[in-house]
Length: 149
Image (tube, rainbow, N blue to C red; front, top):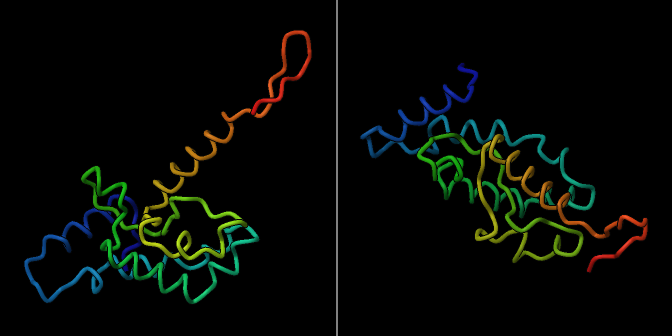
């Protein structure tokens, strides 16, 4: 068995994508197996309020269906012309305790994006930086604090 790295993932997926046999689907190929083998254990990283949701059958069915609908490929990489297996179905609108019970947010395909680990890390880095740069107060030179709205 090949243990994929970024290079082997791309080469193997390109070979499957360019196969001229209409009887072979990406689901039967490396993409589906890779997705299923790498999706396990993701709930361990979920925030406490979301763990029950990520273990639910509704989420698992939605996650698997969405990954299949986009061909098991990272959508961000594919937009750049790079074929990389997607392993994380990412919520575009971040899940919070307020929206975790709302299926229009949690299970809606228009709020989902399949990404590889590298793109997911970049996505969360951008979210972290946006939060970090959003100041809630300011300290003046004379030491007084201004509360920002």
